[in-house]
Length: 236
Ligand SMILES: Cc1cc2nc3c(=O)[nH]c(=O)nc-3n(C[C@H](O)[C@H](O)[C@H](O)COP(=O)(O)O)c2cc1C
Image: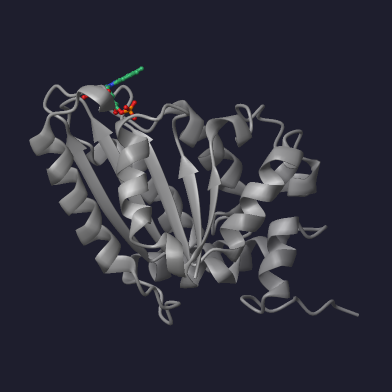
């Protein structure tokens, strides 16, 4: 299986080692492609070219294209990042913002419906839920039905080389157990209830947009191309 990893920090610290522990159970049988913040696009400039003229018109397309192609080819998407200000760090958020054109509200790719995602996070002590939700929300809106998460407050440990033995052992166990859950990821045949609900809602929006658009938007054309809505019949 193809695994794509988005690492939210360049530091070889706790996040990096959690992710390495997780991948150590998967590397031999799978193809792993990793991206780090140095590979990520800068912040979205808000030009909206992706929505209106095509994602290849994005000023950061050269950086986003390899990440998007790898995302599309992946069976398993792994996000590994530290909690910053109780949320996902800006590095990850920058990729999520560039993913927006592929939300179901715009131009979702059918391949996304089959994928599984894993989110691995840690903080010095705060709950990780809100930080994980940043990625989970994007995954749902892009059509990913199954998202596994593991997050931990490290109770004061902030440097890998000073980590308490009991915490390192605990992380090893947790990462092995997470890896066991996703060792064999089969393409999902059915959308989850939530993803299906979002999709039906977006289909309805695009169907109604089709009636009023004098010139079809890229989003509407995309929905027609995939057979999700029927092209309108022109009056003679
Ligand atoms: C800018 C910044 C913001 C942080 N915000 C939080 C926070 O809101 N809550 C928390 O518990 N830890 C916070 N931390 C601590 C990190 O989550 C923690 O030290 C980090 O996950 C350790 O992983 P690493 O070794 O991979 O960097 C913050 C750290 C940094 C650098």
